[in-house]
Image 1 (tube, rainbow, N blue to C red):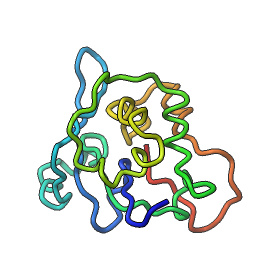
Image 2: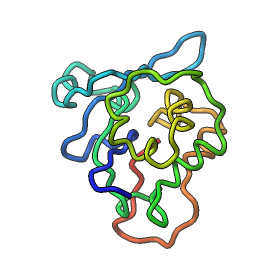
Image 3: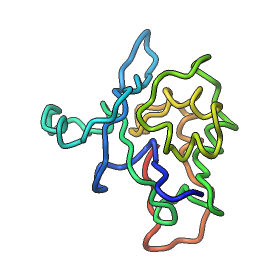
Length: 151
């Protein structure tokens, strides 16, 4: 993969994390409205009550942490591959996205990832059984540095 690719499902604990979308619900369906320009997480984090996980209401982007993420396998994001293989498209056109030029999912899977992206939420307890299944990385040898950046 090229240097400096971004993860469209980043964890807030990493430095440089940005807000790339807002999670909402319409007609009982959770969707992310992607922002045309990323915002620094610090600029909006204080607006969210401490009792609400940030990733429940915001979609975050950040640098791909590659081997430190349990979804990174054989030089690729296995989460992006599972999303494209298992989830239906929810958009028929590509909307503006702050992360697309550097997005690891876009660079790896192309428009197919973007058409599924708005349904990906980080807080899996709010997700369907299929979303839980897609979010689980394939079995990998346990390493202390392996951790998921979320879904």
